[in-house]
Length: 172
Image (cartoon, rainbow, N blue to C red):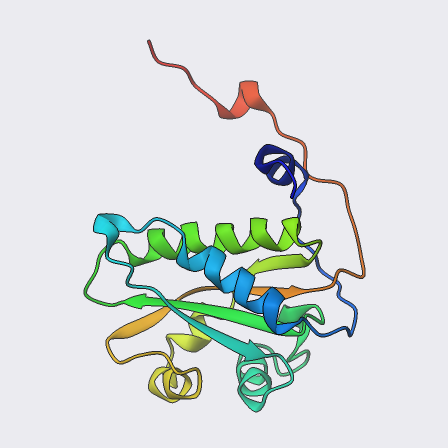
């Protein structure tokens, strides 16, 4: 197991995947990483939908997003984990953000690639919202928050540089 700071500093978003499927153990490990994320008031209100990216629902979402390149948002990843949260809980978006980062870091630790996906939000909150919620098994009273595509990386890149001086202020 890698040191957590090494994983954080070496992680990057992967935008190219092999055709290799993920094992059930890998998928369960990723989702459990999301489930272990802290939530406001310990509500544990998030719901995770694991979707094979060759499913009909993914094709429909992609067509509604970009009919010219319907699966482009997935970069060839074999699964998409969709995270939804309760509509009546004001912290679901923050909680989902924490959970998706846990999944992203767990994927890195498992030598998998991942990329966080927000671009489908307009489609999943649009005129076909109820239709997609049903197809994605999103519970009633919940809405899409964020998603993450995961698979075996076919591409690599260096992690982005940080600029501590530019991005950090210290107030005493």
